[in-house]
Image 1 (cartoon, rainbow, N blue to C red):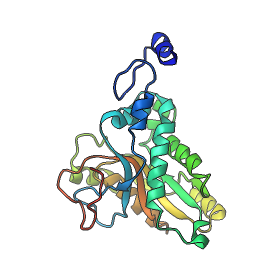
Image 2: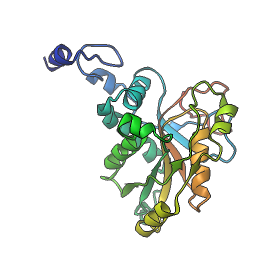
Image 3: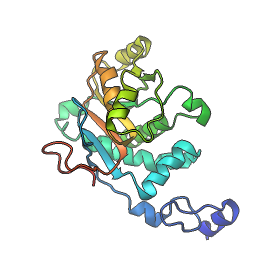
Length: 243
């Protein structure tokens, strides 16, 4: 009855199966993955720390990401945030020593291009990261640190791996004021770069470079989803990547 009422008043349909009612019905939500895996792109950008993703970037997940980022469908942030949180959990699962488990997680969103947040009315990636942090806080201390600023880059759509890498090269930086604030609050932390989608890894690698330039080495990349790899295993030993 609730779904029928929603369809009547809102005209909404599930992005997965197009069933009238909720924008993601209970059945399709139940099909989402609850386990993240390494998501190495191919080719792998030199020096990229291990990337993790919970879903493949297709079907309902792609519709959720695009809807949240480009169509103002803010309600998707809870579902997408939970998928991102799972990627963060998996990426930091090695940290199982009790003394180290108290070390906080510092989740750094990949920044949007200048002006993109103002056009949308909100920063889509940061919203997902904040939702993920809320999900994680019942297990360990997790904070969102929007340390990175984009100097601007062209739209990545349609670019191959080389083009994406060249497009974002040195396009991000970490302002000293932001770094100082975080250093005062978190003298020790595990830094995780967070994004919605890993495609070629170029954007994640640039975020990693900008953090390393100020002395912060991320332990991993975490994303909601990753595109399907097109050239076999991206890295030796990484055969559990998202398929």
